[in-house]
Length: 370
Image (cartoon, rainbow, N blue to C red; front, side, top):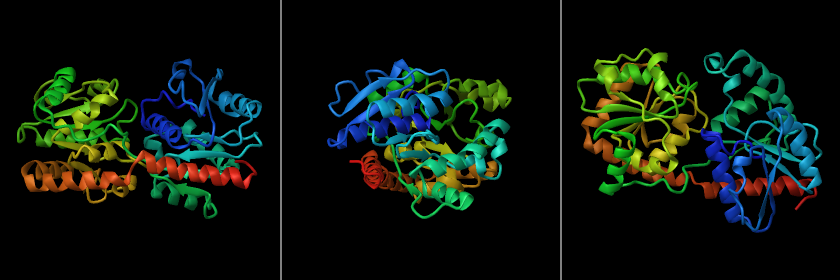
């Protein structure tokens, strides 16, 4: 079920990389790729173990609950996988879904999700969990949260880490670094973070801005906040046009192909997020050898390990102090860079796809499938 394929956020990244790696690794099984959008057609054309199927639908719910199960039955599928957190409830086929965090059920959920979203998830998630043969979880924190909140039996939720896409690596060539600086108007010295509109509070953009305001004038670095339409944060967070606010840059959407050079060009990756399950940008920054400052909270600490300085995301002063520590200490920078490159090896799409494939095979075999 690939209606997530064209999403720009983490779930879109997950969907694209998982499918590509599964198709690379698995020559035994046939994959029926169901799209809701015609824009996805052709992405995997020519793959001998895959066929693409456009399934239009007026709504996500109709697509999930009616259109997909009908097509799966007609085409002889043995199992349905959805890389998001819903499953068809009426199909007789075994289904597997992916849990990207338990945010809707945690304290403070009202900060990040509207009342209708929370009500929907609280009503339907128990049904989805009951229907799913197995739910894949992107972090141990997420697994533990779902098992605790819904009192699930052992093995119902399985943790499967993923990681940065294959093209993420440290970029040192001066011409490549100069090219991304010119393309996005990036300065010589900058702190880097990523966000998206509607996700500012979750990504703690307020804390990042407050910390940068404290740092401004004491460091030569500007603050770069990447992400489509993120310049709207100027109004949302009342960023001034002068002083420190003038040195906050919004380059807009950053092409995935350019991100390794941008991470590599930045002095550090600043990601003191308030709520994450599996923060993909941390694995990307680690793979690029970029020093990281992130939160001593939720899934961020689990993924970052010793490859980051950990801070209280609610304390802008502590965030600013951590930035000063990294910028002032070349030895610390080198340690974080080396630790990140080492830790990035724990998170790969190949290991994710192999673990996912083993679980899918187990589920299919338990229902008499392949």
